[in-house]
Image (tube, rainbow, N blue to C red; front, side, top):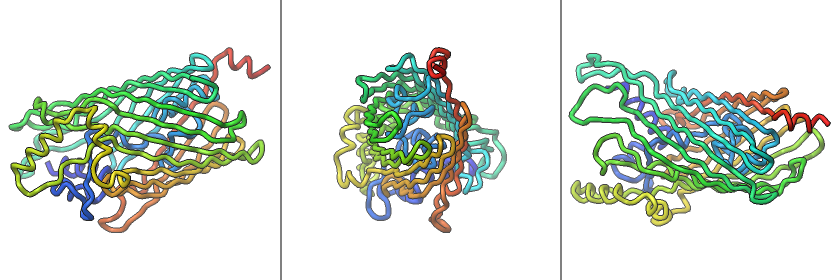
Length: 393
């Protein structure tokens, strides 16, 4: 069981930073801030190499094949009729885990100039795990896996404003292949939805402001046993974003943007040291209805300290070569992840390649477990026959 414990702990550590293990015991970080955790944290991973190079910026940037992963409402503003994006991310490589990765695919199809269909799927693998007993004897292989798939529709409400909606199915099988024990584990399943808005003041050449707002993963709780009282919240989230594009000439332009993220999950009760009281408080916390938990996430101390930020910039030359930089800031109670990112992109005809890199930070035990993270993205931009004919005239 040691390898499984290490992998799962490493995954939690990446989402919760170095304070997560302390938070499991005390309910607070060492500085006293409450720590907020959720199930299926892979939904909080930025799955796109373009956004990954800009500090995970994506709520109000220009529409592309991966818009469904950040703001579904952007897709009617896409320049092409069809977009397909594929991204591969080796995960936690800095911890020596060679078989942990995230795969993501997304795309859209414009029904007309005002509406579009979109979808995406994310697949997260924690690798192969060798289960052992207390003496180290092998008990079998395990393959923890999680994935989520969604389907969305978006439509322009005016020349500048659009609305998007999506439905998502989530499957999490963390105990796959685990040996039998006193507790019967099962895969967790959940359903969620997204609502998004996009408002563009940009001109035809792209210059100007874009604004975006999303509420994502609004859905059911998820559990891994038959005990209905042991279900946990999924990472419902509110995001607001703004981006400005400056066009210097026919070949050069620069986009800069800022996103703000607020997890719509209430703060857990602080441990009192009394096991009976703590269990009562935890039961009450878990029994909170999903809808009321969204609103309750705005109550409690230091709510503004729970807001995370993504800031980034993208320089484009001739819409073929791209340079990107960014910075991601996460509050201590969310995990205390803080890092710089960089990325490049190149596009030829209908095919685009994107790469992003997470700059190492910290030293020793404080080293960011996401250091040296790479993302590789492939994008296809296509047009229907009718649109191709119109463009050639």
